[in-house]
Every structure is written in structure tokens, then in C-alpha cells.
Image (cartoon, rainbow, N blue to C red; front, top):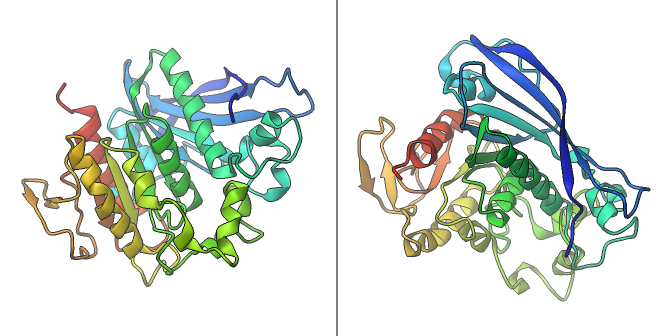
Length: 349
């Protein structure tokens, strides 16, 4: 929309906690959206950020789109690569942040007259060309970056977003529309994320236009799910959304096809290869750089051959890795954190 109300952040509570073996501080936040023009709708963004007590200032931040605020004190399984993502983050001296998208926009068509979309429309139904829920969820991440810019503890120039499935779509949209987001870990995002609409594999336009997901998109999207139009009539495809992130570091991630057919891992790889020339055009390394699992050398590789399982093309700012799991980000978390460290945290000025 042309104008979105401002957000005022307040600290709900702050407490000491322990994540794994790392003493941390946990801060719960509430972003109160100005509803003075339409008081009938109230909107609050729920978020939480946790960081090591000894971290100092200008801490990089990893932000996850989550279904709920996390329990930062839960015990961690044994083995570094099986640790919860927050534990992996704070062990590096960084901040782990969770934002709850459904706190400010419900995941259902029933909520379109409420939440941030309903507030902007003063309780009316949206027009066909107005934002869908995924774009609204991504807006919330931008408002949290606003908060980090006002807080000296955090380095707002080193914020990454991560999400899985529908929140993988959201992470990609957030990075595409807000250049302040330094990096993104886009997991199992499928159609509407990093997979092309024009490839009929897994999720389709018709699936997303159906009753349980149509609200994710603008109303105009629905016309491509019924005759006489189809996905081939769309003026854009998802590699162009990915290209909007260039040359910032983006990891496209997914699991084995047999474990997650819905995501269309091959389609996500195709989109990544098609976005790669834009990275090269803007002076960044595209997908044509592989990086050994031991990270000892970077070599140019062929991208016309689909890489094998657990073979990461991680040497450029646009990266791809298919792990040996299913519809989850877990196995690729260590690789993303190394990727973020190399291209954002410790990049040469």
C-alpha cells in the first residue's frame, strides 16, 4: 500500500537465560502499530531476540520467521550439527531472533480485514492489486530491522532472515523488497518462493489459489489458476524475485525429492541458475562457484548438472545446497552460518 502506519517498539521483558552452555540475555519485544486512523483494528508484532552476555555491541543478527516465540532454555541434543539453530548462532557470538508473522497478520483469508492488511484498508476487503499475506509477513521483518537500527547492541547492516516452507517464501520476499537485509536462508520454499511457476511439479498455482492459501497472494494472482489463463501467462517468474536480491548472499536450500516432493527441489535449482547471471552482472559471484565441504578451495563448476545430495555450491554469493533430510532447514543450518560468516560478518570492507 501507499502508506503503512508506523511501528513503536517496546521491551515486554528482559531476562538472563542459558542456551546450551552459553549464558545469554533474552529480550521479548512488542511492535505496536499506530492505529489512530482506524482504532477498530489493533496490531502488535511479537518478536524475541537473544544474545550472549559477553557479546558486546554491534552483534550480527539471524532472524527466523517462526510459529511462536522460542524457549531458549531447552536442552540441546549432542553433536554440533544437530544443535538447535539458536544455540549454533549464540555460540558464534551473534544474536538469534524470532518473529511471529501470525501475530500481525493471520494465516487465513478470514483475517484479511484484520491484521496489518485490514488496518491499512480500514477494515475493508482488499483490492485485487493489494498485498497478500506473504508480503505483509515480510513487512514485519523490515519493521524489526528498523528496531535494530535504533539499538546499538545490534549491527543492523548484518541482519539475515531465515524461513522454511511458507516462511521460506516470506524470507525470500523480505530480502527482495528490503535491501537492508544482508542475507537470507531460503528453505523448502517451493512455488511462491524459489521454484518457478511454469514448472508443474509439486506445488502449483492452482494449489496456492485454493481456499487454504489464496490469501498469501494479491487477488490478481488468482486469475492465473483458471481458464483461460495459466502459469505460462504470468508476466514474471520466481528467478526474477531471486534476482532482486543480487548481489547479496542468498542460500537456496531444500531436502531430498523423495522426502519432500512438494518443494520441487529441481525447480528451485533451475531458478537459482537463472538468477545467477544477475549476480555476475552486479559484480558478485554467482552459482558457478562450488566450494568444497572442507572449504579449502573455491572452484568453478558446471551448473547445467543438478548437484548431488550434500554437495553445496557455496563459493559464490548465490548458493544452493540439497541436504539429506526432508521439509526442514536443520541439516543446512551450519552451512548457512558459515556462508553468512564468510560473506557478511567477516567480509573485507
